[in-house]
Length: 167
Image (cartoon, rainbow, N blue to C red; front, side):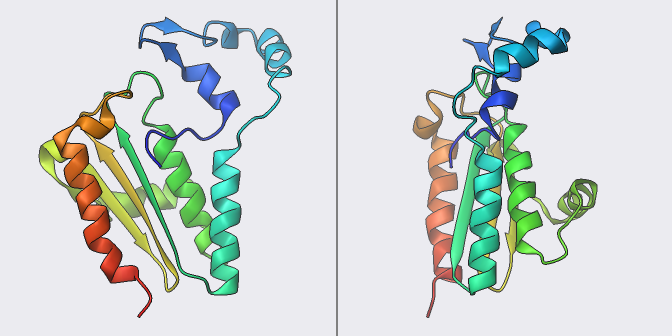
């Protein structure tokens, strides 16, 4: 997933047109008005819940899976902070006892790989699957796939596929 968001309700609170014009974040200061406007959202696109259900299902059934989340810090359309939320939902679902967000953050501080200008990579591996979080320094939203650093990140994803592919 490239430049994903956790769900539409949280997206509309942070979304800025061209990175400058806030869509609904000013309205969020008035919870009653914001809740009323959110009531018109027909499909909340609950990406975080869907990822959680998918991982839990694969883990329960012993199926192989791989999820890669790729986001740029300079994405001013969809804030990159949505990606760590999705990563946590996937990791949480991969463990029978779950994992608290703050515990994952502590683990990530030790486990993440710093690639300098190419950003940070964190991988969570289970017996059945791999969840990767790639937070790149640069890439913007609309041009992320044309950025050479993003191309290199994508190549690393395919190279590491051999490590989790079924024998």
